[in-house]
Length: 244
Image (cartoon, rainbow, N blue to C red; front, top):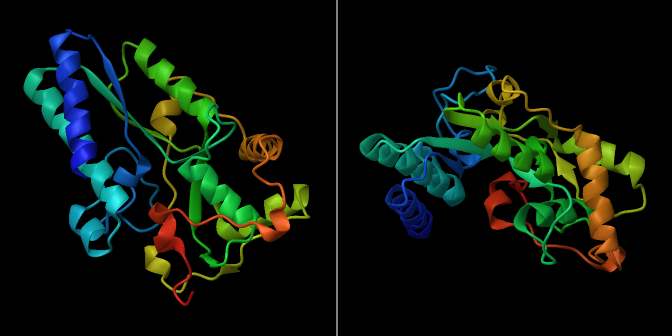
């Protein structure tokens, strides 16, 4: 957590010293999801914050770090009158620029290659990396942009995701899905309405998934898929089936 907070502060201090007129910060929906007091069934919006104690008690360290880091942004911005805007993307998929497989792509590859541990049937919020880039530029250019913006246009359950992937790519060894026994732990839908109202137009989930798989196929990340599995990234461990 220290690197996330200290790194954020270092960037903000440099921006202040250079009198940067506007700073667009990339946060995460991890700083939004875990609020036990949010009304059940109500889509979460920018007013929702992950509860630090909930994150600590459940050892959701990534969410804790993202929450504290973004809180630091707003404390600094208010104290030093810095014009800051925060974008909160969810799971980012799509074609990569770098060769190394990143964390969210590793999750997709874990699902496709049939990782050894089953996943609970929870909701996954997904956004295309190209749409995140569009959102960052949009918020930078729009003078009226302010505050937080959730960047999470698509959500799908584990079961529905597997069914969708199997329709277009039936030959892979997909991960197993188990019903989530802890219904209250399920991530609920969140709204990107504030961002959409500025003119943001994200692409369909199907396009993102198809382009993601095609990228990894061409990159050789799916070669020998029958005998190859990926590890489940630590930040998604709490979605692993409890009896696995």
